[in-house]
Length: 97
Image (cartoon, rainbow, N blue to C red):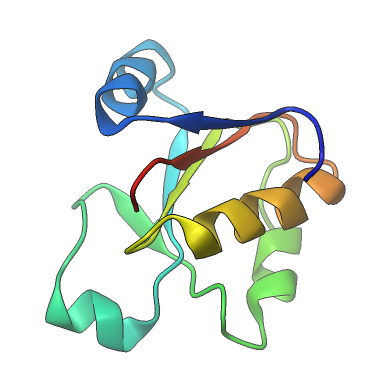
């Protein structure tokens, strides 16, 4: 996994969101998962398994802090690694999902 990727608890993420109002929370679950269990209201859906994930990531500001989550933390870790490899400076995945 690329260096600079952090894992954070939900509590840590909430604290950092207050400190960085420009930060973005990405929900990397599938639309079906989101419909079965809605996530945080402030999150932006960005399905990691979708074929257009790479294209959508390419449109994001690389200097903004990002927090990624899913149901288990597995995809959010993989998505965070992919974003870091593409030059994103501040990427964290939320522990436990």
